[in-house]
Image (tube, rainbow, N blue to C red; front, side):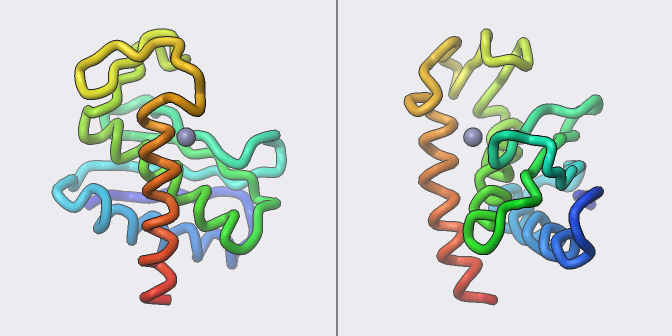
Length: 138
Ligand SMILES: [Zn+2]
């Protein structure tokens, strides 16, 4: 079973994040069974969210800005879950964990400009598709 741990934020936010992450597992990584996602909801972040590899294989740490509301909150979770999918499927490999040695589908994209990074382009594209699909069921 894929697992999600959540800390911080309000009870309502934590319940929503649990549903969102579990839904993203079924949409984005349906064949994976061993993913662990740790989500920290905090105000101590000056961006919307970030995703990094955790200590174990297939473990990922998301930090989400808890001040986000409405669709902004939803798309941030979707965006970071796309990165989880990219790591879990091995299509993105951030070897130094800081973007200085990044491979995308086997090609070196180290030190690419943020908006031109193929994993960001995919995440921005897919976050909108996921938002649309989520709104159909909710
Ligand atoms: Zn991103």
